[in-house]
Length: 155
Image (cartoon, rainbow, N blue to C red; front, top):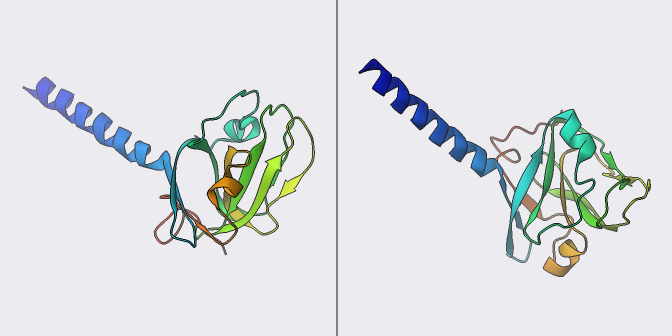
């Protein structure tokens, strides 16, 4: 009986753990015009994941991206060496507000793309997507990490 309980507990833990993690793989951008755009994101949390980013990728789906997270606010700077596809880089403040967008970054360059202000995250999406969807600075990224109750902090 103890083995059955342990197996059931493990199954519930894995199920709820997977659900919690799935929530972090969903990001929503809300524009000032009331538009809502949903993305499935890969998470770049560890230094090795953040160094690699979307390097060596040849495609990126319209509704996907990579979300980089920093627990404390800091200026962020990205470049495109070994990145084969143009990207839009969305720099995100602790409350989820989009501070800056670097549009259509040129692949395979060392051109620096700065956040301009301290940020807690960066969302990389397919190049040209932000302009096409009407996403602008001042819009909000909704994700468990940002906003009230999120993990992101400044100060």
